[in-house]
Every structure is written in C-alpha cells, then in structure tokens.
Image 1 (cartoon, rainbow, N blue to C red):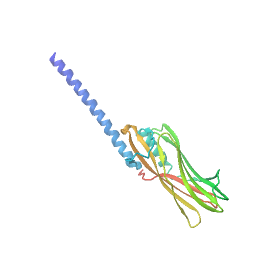
Image 2: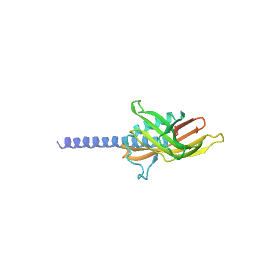
Image 3: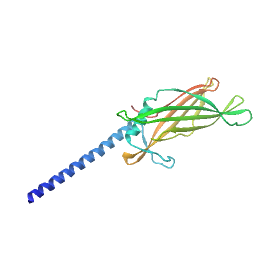
Image 4: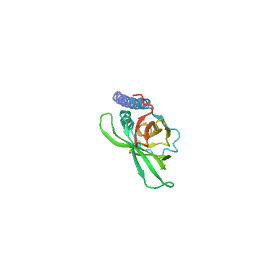
Length: 211
C-alpha cells in the first residue's frame, strides 16, 4: 500500500512539474515572440504615461495586425483634399483645411478580420488676399485598437511655390498578454500641397520598420 501511495505521489509531482514546464515554455515563447515583434516594427516602451490618455487593451497579435496593415500600405500615396471651413479670420480671409485621410484593414496572422481603422490629418490655414497663414494641425483617428497622437507639423516652402509638411506621430497600445505593458510606435506622416493648383499628395509609414 505504501508503495502504491509513493507511486501516486510521484505521478502527481511529475505531472505538476510537466505542467509547470509547459507553462514556463509558453510564457517564454510569448515573450520572445513579443520581443521579435517589437524589433520588427520599431515598437518603443512608454515610460511617461501622463499624456497617453485611455489606451485600449489589445493582444500582441491584434497590435501586430494593425502594424502590418500600415507596413503593407507604407508606399501608397494619396491625393490631398482641400475644403473651406466655416468662419472668417480677418477682413477678406477665410479658413481652409487640407484634409488627408488613410484607411486600413487590420487582420490576424491567419487572415481573420480585426478592424477597419483610419488616420486623418487636417492642416488648417487662413487665406487672406492671396497670402496663406498656417493656423495649426488636427489629428484624428477612427479605431478601437489603439490611440493615435500627433503634435503640430513641420512645414517648408519649395522653390516652385509648393508646401512640404512632415510630422512624427505615435500609435499607443496597451498589450494585455504582456502584463498590460504600454508601448508606442512612431509613424511618419509626409506630404506636399500647392495652393495655386490645389493639388498635393501624402502618405503614412512606420518610422523604423525592419520588415
């Protein structure tokens, strides 16, 4: 009877050890996969969380689906759209907004649908007697998987009279299966616009993608 009890205890101990090892391997596997994703898409850890706001929680795979959609469309350029905005600033001046939107569809590695999301930048100007005054930049997004933030934009004038603008924005994710860690991903926004012709192009691209 003692021998049977000893055998039963050994089986329980070995089973528990096997389960513990399997769980450890799973955790280590998830961590190594996450580190690979971070390196691949240029993901950065966030230390100062004061300005991040309410960042939604997602899995590492869901985050990867968003970033892969951005990567695949990083070389696509879009046409700018200019629109008049209600309200006047000064005598004979009116406000114009150059609106730039890009739409994406995020999927898992297996191809399952996650979410359609959009990034939008609006450059706001006051046009007064053929003189253009830059007012500011508005960033907005349509997404449930991340928070997107951008501040201002760098504008310069080309020799031909066009305007070139650039900005570095960030996507924020809270990764639920990595201890709810908070990360950010830099996204470059670049474009150009000619007020004389009303034409311009722009695109969004991951800043440090290695894929």
